[in-house]
Amino acid sequence: MWTTLDRLVNVVFLILALSMLSVLYIDADERKDFKLFEKKLEIFQAESRKVIENNTLYLEGRVNTLASNQDTYQLSSSRRLDVLESRIKMMENQNKDLIRQNKVLTYNNNINTVGK
Image 1 (cartoon, rainbow, N blue to C red):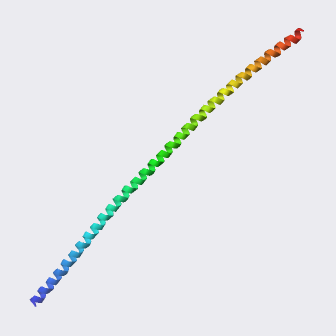
Image 2 (image 1 turned 90 degrees about the vertical axis):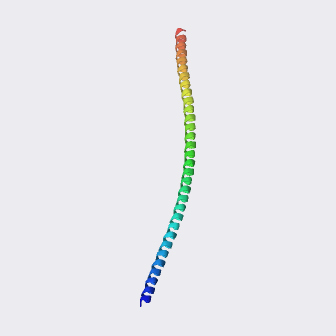
Image 3 (image 1 turned 135 degrees about the horizontal axis):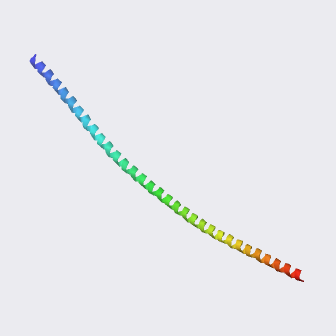
């Protein structure tokens, strides 16, 4: 009877040892999977940062180019406006001079016709 009980205890210990080994193996496997997942997550984060940085640099370049084009357009428009304003002033001055000359000619013409 003691041998049977001794064998039963040994079997129970064997089952407990096997179950502990399987739990440890499963735990080690899960840790390995978790570390692999962490590594893949780090790679994904690095790639995402790189893509975001490249897109940001591209968009900054585009915005700077558009701002430069806008500045150039605004500067040329301002210059054209200045040229047109100076032409208008010149034409107004010429028109005033012509009106003055016309008044002088009319006045002289009136004096000449009255005097004859």
